Image (cartoon, rainbow, N blue to C red; front, side, top):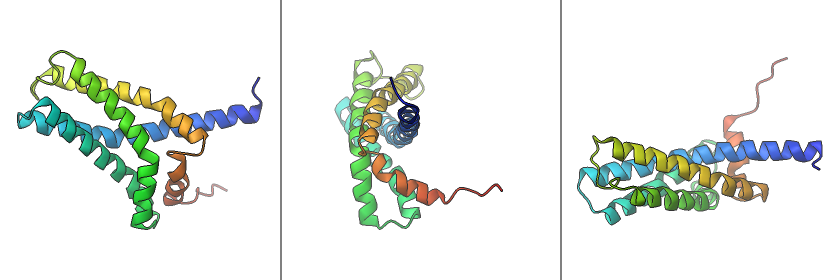
Length: 165
């Protein structure tokens, strides 16, 4: 039986994990979509398109984590280290899941940019990747790792809460 404090901590950890997963998925999705669109538009092979998508997913994922850190006046080198520490596991998991799904859905990698198969498969793969990453992100946060490493900096960048008195 959980105490009220444990339930509140669980709820706040879950909320933080959800926000962190959505944040990470946003950066990952930008890179993934851009890589898939570029690879498809240029007629690149599946392996090259997937590799491009993975590289861009990491770039944009790290970038979205670093921007609030840099706004909070964290040194660039520190921001890079925090982004690597907080995002690498979740981005890697999302990339394994979403690219794996794209590769196993018949016709997804061969569909054109004007086809539902391309966009539907890509959207589905990203949603499933986010769902798959959530428990891992939550587990890391509960242990003070992953996005927990940057949460205090992101909160600092947002500024103090407004006084409503």
